[in-house]
Amino acid sequence: GIQVEQSPPDLILQEGANSTLRCNFSDSVNNLQWFHQNPWGQLINLFYIPSGTKQNGRLSATTVATERYSLLYISSSQTTDSGVYFCAVELNYGGATNKLIFGTGTLLAVQP
Amino acid sequence: DAGITQSPRHKVTETGTPVTLRCHQTENHRYMYWYRQDPGHGLRLIHYSYGVKDTDKGEVSDGYSVSRSKTEDFLLTLESATSSQTSVYFCAISRTVGNTIYFGEGSWLTVV
Image (cartoon, rainbow over all chains, first blue to last red; front, side, top):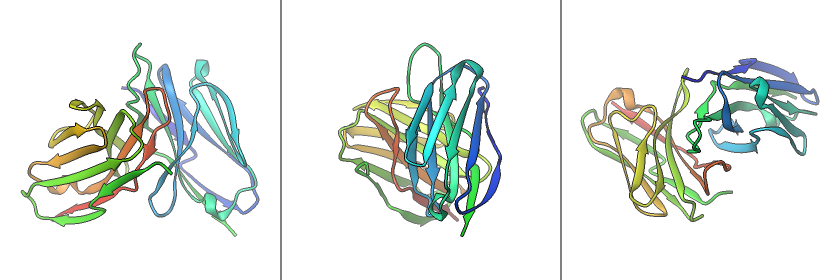
């Protein structure tokens, strides 16, 4: 099956620092989304980004589908950015189902 | 925030008993999903629904059944709970395929 690998697995930042999280996937996909799970367990959708670049405030994401990777950029990190960041993809089998396969996540801790 | 309510939010049950988790949405989204989250495995799809009475299996469907008799409700049933089904269960919705997925707040289930 498809492999979805995220790096780094863990990351510690000082408040105000920038970071880049990476998601590699092993097969062609027609759907890629980034999620943030906060320390209370809530999952928030950050980006729906099967290709191209999007920005939302301090966060931005880029997906290069032809090279099978996506990047999530966090600028000027804040303590509220702490949590786990998941990348999730849907395989491209010719028909869309929204059946997402999740990576194992990047655990981010932002220290004051 | 997407209007998704999961119930119960926390439950402890004994091995061999039936358990039903409910997901209720007020967004009139067509697609609904049940995921489980376990340490070391990330989020895995159990079952999903693409319309009233239309459901399909995900990657970890053994031991689970689902029903969707109304657009707004998607039920997940463990016919005879086992300790391996101790997990956090997330409901999710999306308007269409190839679209953003929104998660509920999760249901913590412990099988003793």
